[in-house]
Length: 178
Picture: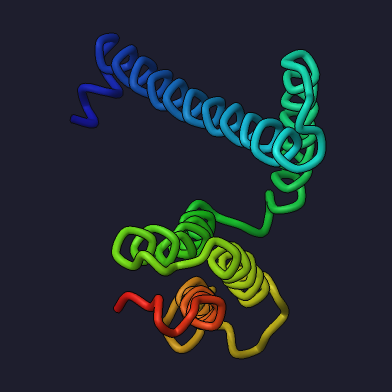
């Protein structure tokens, strides 16, 4: 296969097309994520809590502002981490962040008494613990892991305790559905 790639015009163009396809898919995903996050901030947070009577033009402006602010933050983050993070490190941090959604989805589907407030607070606390352990200057973190476990699992434990404990405390004892 390597000979085909090195010595053949077909192999060369095949690699170019595959590389362009990978970049296109990545950019499409990033664009969709950026638009979704901006829309959520504009409609769910800004229009939901700060300006309930906001016009569509105002929401569009807030969404664009959020997009530019998020792009600026991500550019700064990419520059700050360009020599500190490999692709494997980024995949590890992705795992640490995504695993924090487990209580919201898994318990939200199965347990009717799960409350939104403790879930959000647990999510934020789990993210804070995960990222602090991953990026903090701690001697007990070796290779991005603590005793062989990803920092996201420790954040998940905190997240789960807050989501379940907070929901149990906020629900009436007679309304509990186990």
